[in-house]
Amino acid sequence: MTTPRPTDDLDAYASSYGTAWTKDPTGLLDFFDPAGTYSDMAMGTTYTGHDDILRFHRWMLKFAPDSVIEFHSPAARHGVLYLEWLWSGSFQGRLRLADGSEMPSNGERFSVPGIAACHVTPNGKLTSHRDFWDVTQMIAQLGV
Image (tube, rainbow, N blue to C red):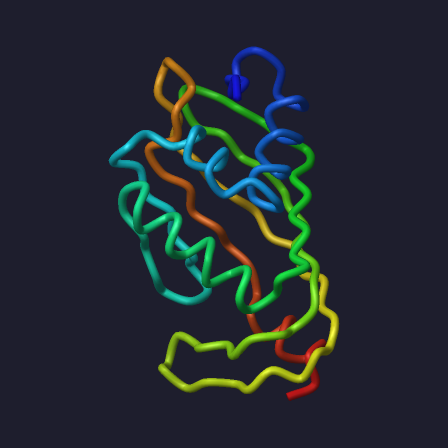
């Protein structure tokens, strides 16, 4: 897969990145520098390197196997990329919260917005991706 660079076409990059998060875990790694990080700020977790990022992605798909992530409204400046996103799916696996407590699955659907702040190398690889979103909004939708 040829991974677009954010400097080529921001909208095409956002679309390809969303497709990778949604249904192409191996392709997702093509977006990241081998030492890159993914941080879920709502959950207080950071995953470093391809193996850890892939581990997070597998967990996400256990939680919501029908996950769809759509990135939109991309903006870039001086090596920083911002993407608004919408994550939707159904609650099929347990959810571990930042405080260590767990919520059992119930099959309910959710749709939560967020924003990603990413650092990008000149060759287009992500050295960091930090997601900011409101986990309480998801919990309210899941009704648990």
